[in-house]
Image (tube, rainbow, N blue to C red; front, side):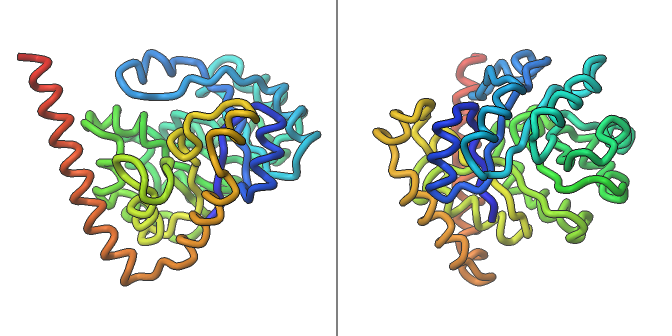
Length: 274
């Protein structure tokens, strides 16, 4: 399992790498995001492509740079990401294989490409997407996907076994991941339950969510509010301990927890409308 931390702070990136985090994501996506996610508890980062260069100078982690959805400036954005030295380019709101081919026409094999699949249409067209050479990995974004599907709660996607359906289509042609995790045993849906679905769906990448590091931003936040090395080691050790039997048992609890939370949220929303 490769763990991803979103930050544009070189000191945090270096510290996270020392603590066992394998990948750093610089998130420059802004175009249309607030309008899409106005009604969910989402993060709106203010990172810059230039941040990639600063992080490259401080740590050995693989760096992913997420840019804006396809727009009139996409070619320039991709050129800047390549020049900055990012290892992976991530492009959000992919709709179909035509989007994939468009991005690849700009990269010219100069950077590895991770399509971020977070639209219903990308799921329907997944077979065509994975058939294209040049896709290094895939990642499924649950916030926008759940919004597009008009779901109450983003982890309804997790418990629906949709990721297993996608995994069957991907058929191990490329690695993939989805969503984010909190700490083991913590939060509304603890990481041990979420990771059971990752295991059963053959996912091998996951983002460390805000709950994992207590919404930390600065290096002082990380050192004062978290025990990052311990939490990362515990997460990876737990992942290594999973097998078909214990993952299946945990998955039953996952589905029950998500259904309960979804119903609670649905009732709250209904009361607001009355």
